[in-house]
Image 1 (tube, rainbow, N blue to C red):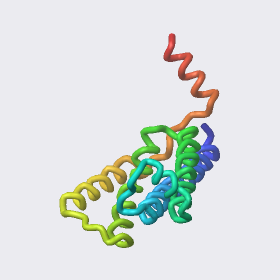
Image 2 (cartoon, rainbow, N blue to C red):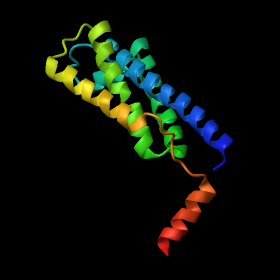
Image 3 (spheres, one colour):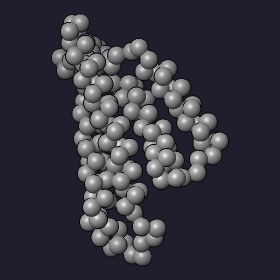
Length: 144
């Protein structure tokens, strides 16, 4: 792949990864914020979808899914999952700061381990996705 294509893929992947993470965090936050403590019947779960804050959460999670699918279409799974897992950390922080949830020392330790893993996997490496023609060539060569 040419250098300009690599640079374009790196920028495109970074922007899409940011959308994946932001829509995941915001979608889950709004979904949790709008959910009542208890729902009496399964039908009640459907009616909750019509609350504006829950509907916003659902729409953001749809954006998360579509943007994640887009990112996976051009970047390696081994790049996408670790990079977007920073969303787990941001969800925990949103829960602590915005929803006043209690996070134990054990959970904070897990969050730090996740961040360490993200730094190790994503630091300085570009997504290693090949073009469709390169993928076909690679598949054909591995079949021989």
